[in-house]
Length: 258
Image (cartoon, rainbow, N blue to C red; front, side, top):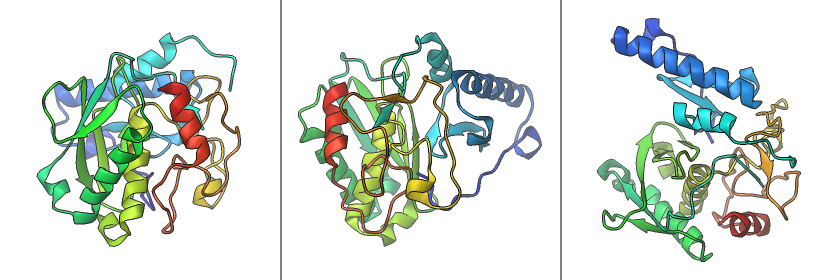
């Protein structure tokens, strides 16, 4: 959910310390990109920013997660989810913001409301803020520049471990902050963009397809296969009028999976 972000492909020449570590990182990223293309993601939707591989503009893909996409059998079905989900053994997800994150009042309030969004549904897991005890998994909430956010997909049965939320969201309403944070947590537990097949639905501009090929973009039973503006928290881009609340199809999707 990057908003107005520049797409930068970073090579070794722009990275600090491109010795052995840089070569290892480049090798890992080359494999991630190769795995994503094999899994059905179009090459022009994959980008490398600051040494990390992203798809759909805000979903960080680790080497392990990219390998799991190829190991999981294809499903016959075409909200959408990734092939990787959070295991049923994960019952308590601790969401721990950094001190810098907490210094932005609307980001902090938005996090509380986002956590409440999930916990109100009685899912198989509970989100808890600022806890280190009994955590099945931990997500760090930290800041980044701009107005938007990024995170990643689950791997190894656990949610992605970081959400990055733009500090410029401080100038938006608490509801918009709630929306963006709820969205990024959604990626960590396996949700794709609802309009992955045409980002122009929520973002405007020319049509862009993030790719599916039956792998990594699986329709969740009981939810619509087409997206509309305001139809889901998981739409690619957000509006300044967002309420931060789930839509009916979001709730159906969450209950179907968790």
